Length: 320
Ligand SMILES: [Zn+2]
Image 1 (cartoon, protein in one colour):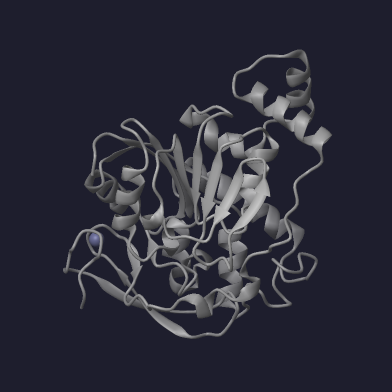
Image 2: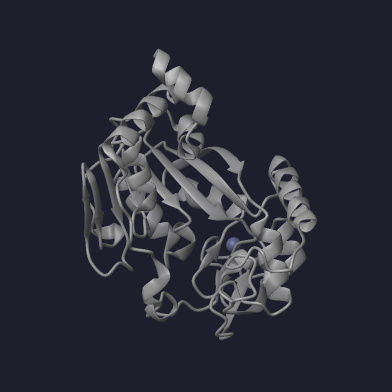
């Protein structure tokens, strides 16, 4: 039995065997559930994961929006971040607050802040941010074929985190941290790349919550073998403290996906299968009433801090 890679505990650890079910190869992978911090982690980390990130893993057909639409979106975002203009007020009334700002508002940044997104894929999020006025953004992803340049300050590089230098106002990991083979190293790199008091936002699936307890290895967000670490609040606290960060708050943002995805896996239906609700929402596999119920339940779980994914807000308190 191996020790937990987060807290080094060797007692009461359990091994679970999970199948690859996104594409449905059904290859099996062992995961260790730590008896101390609860982190669920790949028992062995393969060196070459590229086989499980096929060429179509990222969609590369992104385009910038037209100038006028970008102008309006910028005005709306400035309003949402504390600016106040008549047009801004009107736009927020009509369109509401951009979803990305729901995550970013607690961080206290502006459209001039330098933002670094780790594991950005083809860069959809950064492009969306650029469209609403963020002009200094960098993204990296080691699984891209090549660098991407969308112009106007959005750069996407095929690089590893350890290769990046500089200082950023905010570093974000939107569902990428769980794919990284060494979370301790990743968070130490993040510490090196923000000033004292600098912010790091980490959105990840959370083990130990209702979905893990209910579905175990059929939990859709276990996503073997791509997800290497499924953290708990406790394992994140340990990791943050070790790397010079304090967790300021945690917001659960899980969705109906934890239910319909996991129930499909229980029934042997891969996520990318023709029968999958994700590909064909009109398939009769779930009724509208069932999906409504899943959505309602996800909101309840989020309020109880028991949803299967969350956003962690970290502040650098010392150099790691
Ligand atoms: Zn542990």
